[in-house]
Amino acid sequence: MDMRRILQKRINSPKVDLLDNNTQYTIRMEVPGTMPEDISIELNDNQIVLIHLKKPAPELSEIAIYRECRYGNITRRVKLPNKVHPLNINNGTFTVDNGMLNVSFVKMET
Image (spheres, rainbow, N blue to C red):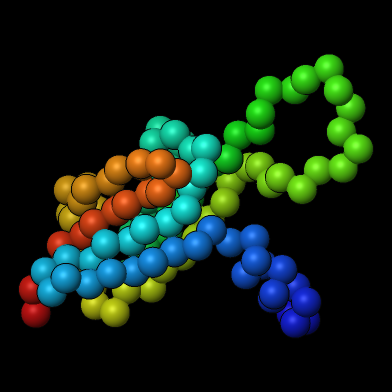
């Protein structure tokens, strides 16, 4: 993959913060304009996969000269430093507030 494509992918990816408070991880991801029902969260080993569907605004009578807004499925993978228990994905807290997705997972005890 060339450098331009790598940079473009990084620019288009939603911004993510990964926080650790000793007992759980919290992931915060920018999801402006997304409703909670449009978000899917999956767990693969110690990687969280966040998928959100960004729906286009309703079509207006105007013709678009150019478009910079992206729509469709946007996927972001976040590798966790330690494993979380698979059941925690269902028991984790999940909120969307002011365009920010917040997901918390309890760490797996070692």
